[in-house]
Length: 76
Image (tube, rainbow, N blue to C red; front, side):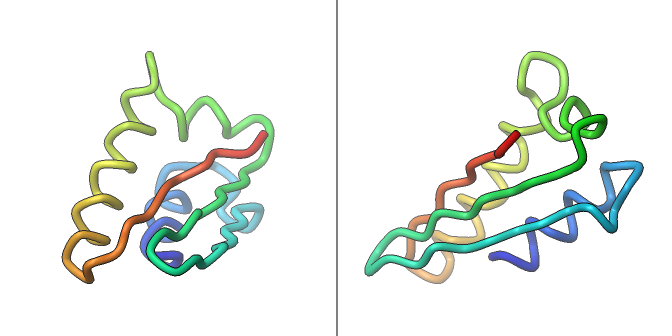
């Protein structure tokens, strides 16, 4: 999951080298934290949060396939 989010985020931003993804793994749920450069934050969130919602939908579909739950947190 971590690699999936990193790949998507790096494709969206102007500074792909500043993308940081950390994963906090629980028993059933994983929390994936995404950090990007301050100027790229808007690109990851998108208008009215549409891009962030799309990324969360992809993450949800991928995590369902491996019978886990994943939550995406976008950190400023």
